[in-house]
Length: 138
Image (cartoon, rainbow, N blue to C red; front, top):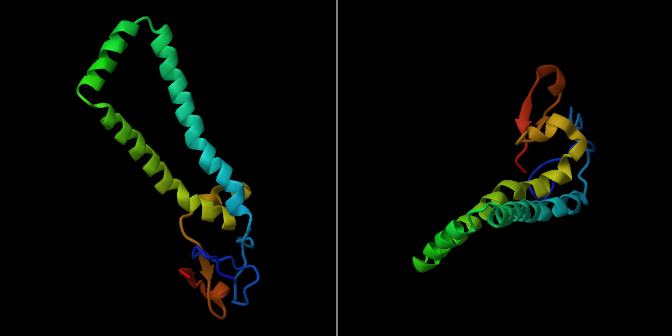
């Protein structure tokens, strides 16, 4: 069976050597990973904001911080910081979006198997003895 994302789950496959170590596709894997995918940037940004607020209010240099913030507003540099935050979110999205689909094939309990970027399978008659392994692309 082939997942829509291009990875293969082969336990029920009729190909020789298929099904060793790769579980069936978990249709709810996407749903299980989604809360983690959404909440991680919110929690991390909230923690960073809380630390910044604590340093601002308890750091003892509030006037210096206010002057620096005023300089940012005066020179219209606030957009630079907004762009950095949006870039940070974009990088997070690009790095973690494939994890939504990867969770359908590999479980959170798969251990070091989750570190693999590709799914390989044995192919052909006598593949186990000959050691033929192919990268599944469809």
